[in-house]
Amino acid sequence: MTRRVVLNKRRLTKRQVKELISSGARPRPDLSVVLEPTLLQPRVYELGGERYLLVFGETIAGLAGKGDIYAADDFHRFVRWTARVDEDARHGRQSSIGHWTYYSALKDQLVANIDTLVAQLRSTMSRTADEVDFSYQSLDIVSDYVEGIGVERAEREIYDHLVAYVGEVLRLRIHGHWEVNTSHWQPHPYLVGAMHDPTMPINVVWEQLAGLAPVNLRAAAANEVRRKRKPPGLVADAAASVRAVAPKGVLATLPADAYEVTKRWADGRPWFVIFKRDVEVAGIPCRAGEAWFDRKGDLIGAMLSREWLFGTRGFGAGSFFRYYRGREDGRLNDVKLGADQEIDGLPCLGGTVAWFHPNQRVSVLNLASDREVDGIPCASGDNLILALNFHQNGRLASAVLAREHVVAGQRYERGTLLRFDRDGWLIYAQPYLH
Image (cartoon, rainbow, N blue to C red; front, side, top):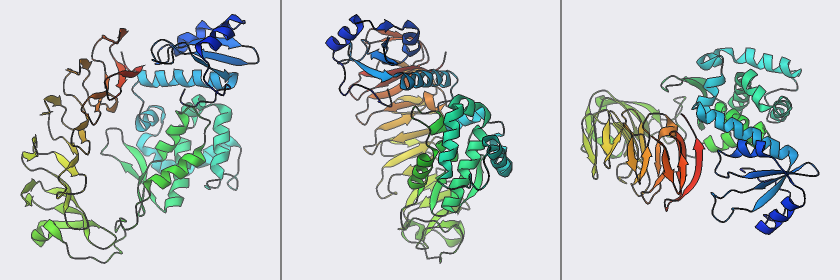
């Protein structure tokens, strides 16, 4: 279980499990079937005193036959959560944006209806504006209400309302404003603040609705603000209040009329620029459009105007590259591919982002066509769930099966999401699509 609230202090041994079962534990095959798709593949028994015994299946080395005891409320919560995870996986709504988009009635029009949604939420909860007042403390009241009606009902009836209210709490906290990301294939609202990176109320609500633990919007909102706070000295000049400072580094070698500065670092150095025409920056062919520089004037990211080689990997025109620490460091962080192309012998889908580990091995990519990797038939597609993940040693970390396949003696259907450890051993299996 993700949230271990077991009643036993130590995991039950095989002998202890057998003794409990022989003492009158009642088999619950109905619950065992519900949990069968998980990697645990457990057997479930009902004990006296409103308790349940979960016995681990044979799929987990070292745990087979051992078990844990759970209070009835915690166990039923886990069963419901497992069913929701399976349902979300089958419908491809495992990301925060995908999940919200599925349930949202307003979609990208949410921003235009913030006041109405907040008023409706207060009315639904029978709470006044003095009680639900956009404070962190008020999120405890909202969390209790969601717990009371159940997250399933909250998803269906007040998802937009929760995003609007949590968003207003965050907006006031970061002194920001609402924006809509229209470049994403699923347009969605987010918050912009001078001292914070883009802040996502959708992430906060989704994390709590889709999680196993009791809803705690207050803690999740505070964590979102903390995660998105920019380090000192990296605050952009959003209000044009920072004194402009002459560029340094490779940016200083470009003609002044070749670019326009759109954002500056806190010390006034150019951060985001728009190239007015195709230019070469330290020999790298950059297309007209947005590019990023660090405070030393070193190139961080830009779009290629023609094919270019980074180390041993070439990327085509229209690909937007981003470095870990700038051009001088030379290590790529990620590249949004301008067209279909091969990366390390694998056909990758144009328009998707290929990510790289610090050691420059591939971290994440989306296949343009189904391929076998490390003996696993991997599915292609642009969905984030379909992306192949790799460990730093180059071994496959996760993939969705392109066809039925046997792993470690177990047969898995097409569409099963598999996760592997760095040595290639299967550690997780979850149905995704059929």
